[in-house]
Length: 443
Ligand SMILES: Cc1cc2nc3c(=O)[nH]c(=O)nc-3n(C[C@H](O)[C@H](O)[C@H](O)COP(=O)(O)OP(=O)(O)OC[C@H]3O[C@@H](n4cnc5c(N)ncnc54)[C@H](O)[C@@H]3O)c2cc1C
Image 1: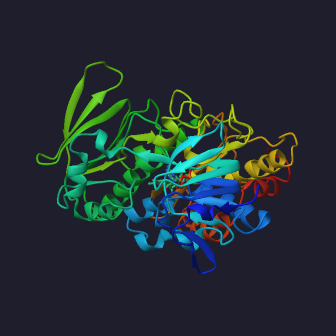
Image 2: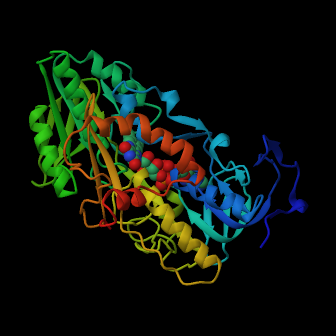
């Protein structure tokens, strides 16, 4: 099927911007059609579109995403810690999406997998031969009473690295902190980058130690029953927490923020009906997350959790063979990270190409994910593991140890890798380097 835009419905033509077709038409109803539709232009969507845009030809790939900016969200932890600036973490969406693709700056509101067609908020329809869903995961700040109020108040001490709207507040909170509790929370929901809620706790603790602020108590309150999913790195992190004097409370869930009194209310997940209140000077919140509504409300596409139901090996939808998924919006039972997206890209490329050619899908995703656990201003544990939480380490040394090299990798190398290689479709994770560094003996 060729990509076309039905002129019968066209009121105003597409605007051509710097060699890209950006559809900004205000037509009543535009009908598009394409070989490959990519829903979402974030880490997964942009990278997979880049692989196919030039290969399939001009405008044979359509990307739909309403966002003006593409954020490298993994940099948010460094911004919160005062090690990077917000303007280093994003590029204009127009500048990262592949030039040969047509970008519809719009939101997909409905997917009809039986007709292989989607409808957008503006009322356009897009028919596709193949579709990759990459809509990410949503933040649910509203779920916790008082949280948004606290985030919006500049003097409240409430902050969150999870949104570009609030991430710049964190470093100010750290700098002003000289006594009392600094509380860091992890919610009772799936999240993206499960390490991020505690990385900023260690960075804060390190800042306090370096500046001799002994009257600050750092608490990490997590709804999880463990400090980290993969046991090898959990062991390391317990030692880091002890060294940095971070008190870890497991099985506790933030349920309310009282910014006027600087109080946080928690529910115990191990003792039913037990709640308790803690005072804070600083409160860093990882908000509850929820699946994107366009997938969650579509019972043909999602499972009971609301995420896109795909095969954990092939990344193909469990019911619709012309639909694939990547990244945070999927049911893949691995830690939701940009690194996992990179690990999925090669598998998706091979299997999607096989499907397009009518061949059997042969590539299998092993659940590879990575979390650079920054533990202070100059140290990082580079966690890399698979579906079974077994280490899948790239380097031929023990990555369960805090290292400065891994900190520099996270701070200086990874942003380059992301913007210059991954988003251009040229990076599929470190698997090949892992094999070379382990002399071909690694998985
Ligand atoms: C604080 C923080 C720290 C992190 N640290 C790390 C780290 O150190 N290492 C790491 O690897 N990862 C990290 N991550 C996680 C990483 O950023 C995500 O896992 C990654 O971006 C997921 O990519 P994605 O393509 O699935 O989703 P996203 O990159 O979030 O993109 C989703 C896109 O879909 C679009 N969209 C949503 N709904 C629709 C719709 N209905 N129609 C059209 N478009 C839609 C959105 O506008 C967005 O552009 C971190 C994240 C945060 C927030």
